[in-house]
Image 1: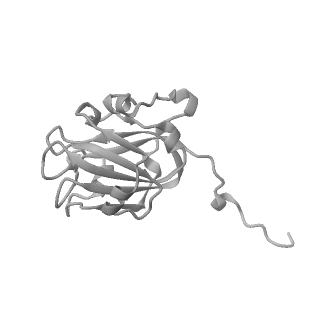
Image 2 (image 1 turned 180 degrees about the vertical axis):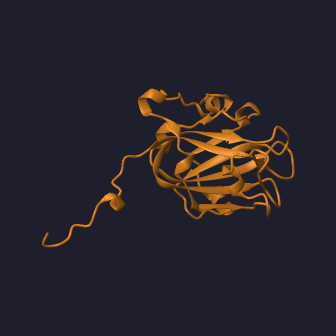
Image 3 (image 1 turned 60 degrees about the horizontal axis):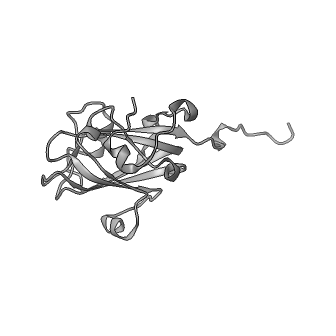
Length: 184
């Protein structure tokens, strides 16, 4: 269930009615070939976020910052993100979201304004407590860069799971067309 917890209140966004927009779990639209993470610890990589096992984690390496890029197989409208993390000091606190930036580095986070900044609470980091986004800013998303700027005081940051909620944007998929033979 999508809840509008403290992250939603901080976002200042009212949740659209699921029946109006057919908001659903669109995590299956993540294109893993288009995903990467900077500053991840070897053995605790971004792939763990999509395994369905909260004991597997994405963990930062050198400091608390992480920069995760998630690509989607098709353009989507993002409604909310369900961040799941341990309930200790490694939990992300400030998360900045950047849209459609395929090759971001840490220096880019200083140079570009995020589409939205989330201040996550312990309640926001429990499974099923999705943080509602400013829906008007997330209408045509092909890629999302998630910058964990800091955490609750630990030297490393950890995330257990990510789930995305929204709707695919109706687009023409050229692969669905059959080739027409000439002279037929």
